[in-house]
Length: 120
Image 1 (cartoon, rainbow, N blue to C red):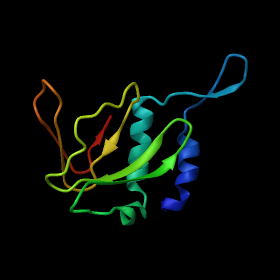
Image 2: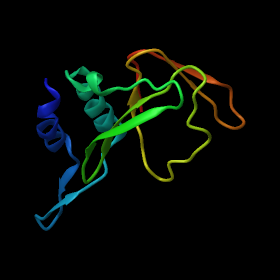
Image 3: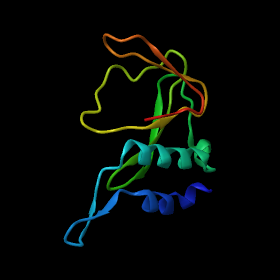
Image 4: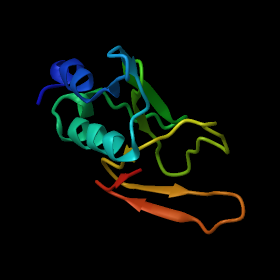
């Protein structure tokens, strides 16, 4: 699948629901639906060419912005960090395309997440 066809994938996978009165509404995707979107996107071609490795700081770019989810490509080299931050009430799913992610949460053990593992 080419990156250019991601718009079709995103539309197909979007959390559109039919309400009791027959109207459609955009709903929240379940963790399983998000994991499916990320897995399909990570399996597509073309997005890896957009990644930039910057020695001075982590790099990121939003590749898709939709009504119920966004797709970001983020690169961090060893020693780079996002710092402690909070995503509020949002849900997230990610896949490690190359390398290892080291996750630190206050009061918890450090977690290492390895290549090509989808995390919901």
